[in-house]
Image (cartoon, rainbow, N blue to C red):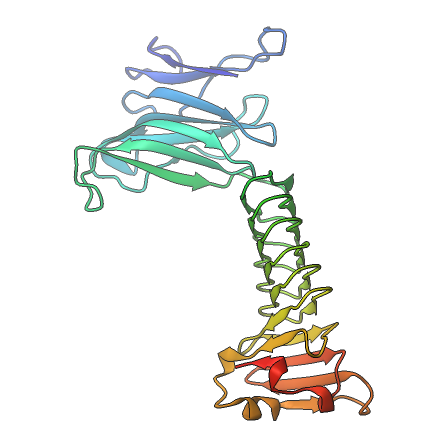
Length: 321
């Protein structure tokens, strides 16, 4: 795919300059006809930059005119399908519209989003020098992603669809986004956020932080000293090996701890503002017989089922207030 400036005054854009594009096959032959990139044809459009998206589409950014920005030039963008047809409408990149914005550069991120950086001449309060460099991240994804991180400390963000995201090595931060996601931290001290949807989070072998967010989630700490919080919804929490801390807040819904180990794991109730540990312990109750290894806790819109311990074995060392 090649994009270029056009000042021929021929075709749909008879202004002083437009942006044209052409898709090519791998052997250098043309694939389809040449096409116009810009939709708005008021004034000149110039400085095109192009980047290939992870799903086979591509995005073009350029300096031009916008019906939402009459103070000077604006940074515009258009996503295209692999065959050169437009995917959605042309859009303005910059939010700041005072004076001019130009000289855009686009970079595709590993998780499929892309970031556009550009020069800004607005003299805004956060940079009142002659110019500033601004940036904006966009999410063009139209399907779920299946990606893995690198050996570095990655930040990966899921889409609005069902995703599979693996941090691999490094201390990663992963956000699931919308829908039902599977998130694996793997090695490293990772932070996993399910956000919305019914997610499955797997910490890995190190000291991880897992937060389910909205929805009925399943969280697995695996190895290491993990901090596990289901968030809203009816969640299933499993620490696996390691000394884990299960964290709860008010109005969290009904959660189940599948493998609480007395003397090793802890239940964090700081958000409930108990006056002392005795007041907190009074909110726990036995479920079934005294040897059933199952407790309950119900207070301030949060209900917890705790498997692996009887009421007689629970003490102040098992909770955090």
